[in-house]
Length: 409
Ligand code: HEM
Image 1: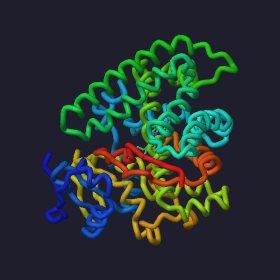
Image 2 (image 1 turned 135 degrees about the horizontal axis):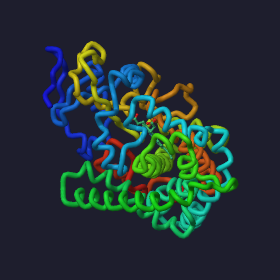
Image 3 (image 1 turned 135 degrees about the vertical axis):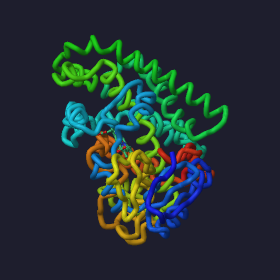
Image 4 (image 1 turned 180 degrees about the vertical axis):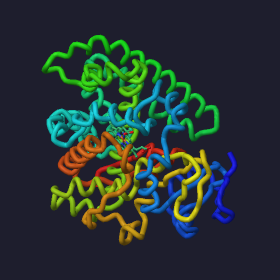
């Protein structure tokens, strides 16, 4: 696809899967800002937008910058189309089925369950740290927490949780595979597709069991299956894919946020001490880690029709735009000293969960999990430090450390 645009526009060419860029994308973002905030990356044949305001404008206009053209790629990832790639009323109706379940007040009832899940994983890690061991917290702590939470919410029976976790891990790893142009990448993608097919099949088999929900057995699969709109207007494939999407959309992202919380607060003991003296700042600290590092580092939209402009640049019909949410969250026009990690900074909304029509359905769940995780971490581990370099791999779309080695401080 060639860029069909106004005569003058800034060009850049860089590889977004280069581990050096994924580990430290901030200089590149400053360069894009210096070029006006909108550039065309010839290497990946996409526009890239770094400014907070421009990203928000794009996200506010789904009729001009749409998600639907990504439908085919998306269906392959989840085993069918989901709300994320519909822009019309069908999106709103599917989203409304679960929107009540993801409100803060509804989610508050999950606090005891989430706390139990966090403690079960954190307690052995804390004991090992106290014994002077070094622990790799992604594999041993953070990765499993969101998977167990969503398994509980979907009503996965306890005997299946280990298998469910293996499918979720394989799906998460496949995202990394797409950014690796080698044999290992191809293996990860194949394993992810296999896991998606198996999870699809598991959910499909669960549907009949959920069609007559028992009052005290609430779960998300049952909520959708029993909903009038789903019965009349969603295909079985859409219902299965929608539930699969929750596993994929929620686990890798939230696990990376938890890992980033451990890593960022290890690197900023001054901020950790502020939190220790005022535990009420846990949610502020979560938001600041999220703003500062931004897990969903980039998303995309496609220009629809001839009227798409970003800033003063016209984008041709069908051209793809990468929204650099990580860059937007460090936009100096919006935040003072944006590169400084400061949990007490003035609260301003960030784009870590995007904005508008497709803003993250699970944002309050992710926040609650991260808040409980951080509260427990501060309470039990107290002080910790990095015991090795962070490895960010090759995936800048869902960015976060693949490995975090930690020791007690
Ligand atoms: C830190 C954790 C998370 C991050 C950073 C994150 C980020 C995002 C972002 C940026 C989007 C917008 C995508 C776009 O506009 O193209 C999104 C959408 C979505 N997220 Fe999340 N997410 C997280 C956790 C979760 C969780 C826990 C769930 C559910 C269990 C979830 C479910 C969804 C769904 C269903 C959508 C599509 C919403 C729609 O199309 O209306 N996410 N997420």
